[in-house]
Length: 174
Image (cartoon, rainbow, N blue to C red):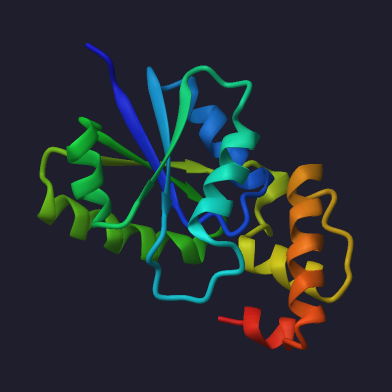
């Protein structure tokens, strides 16, 4: 029997913390599906297709990691692909309360799906996509936070927004 886990998120953009959690999940599960959510209640910089492409590139060398987009409830997505586990990362203590409540809600909706949380590696505890977008939008160096192809995609996306006269920094604050 194959144990499939889903690592869901918006990945706007994917960063080294996400990559670390997914790769470590491979040591625990037979298959990892990185699930890119396309309907969050927040503003995003990258389209669903762009985020899926970036995530696919991040894991192109990982045979046991696949990438799929989804737009329904996460537990419904899990059930549709036969996944029994939701993989989540915990960075700091404040993440625990949010993740705990989400795990309980998901358990109520889908009792057959368990949530497994991995503690983020120490070097990534400060890292989240909002921080990456904010630093990049202000011209800061994000090369230690994201792979080169993500840094380049951020630069291109932000340049296009600036050329269109958009207030990039304030449009990224959620």
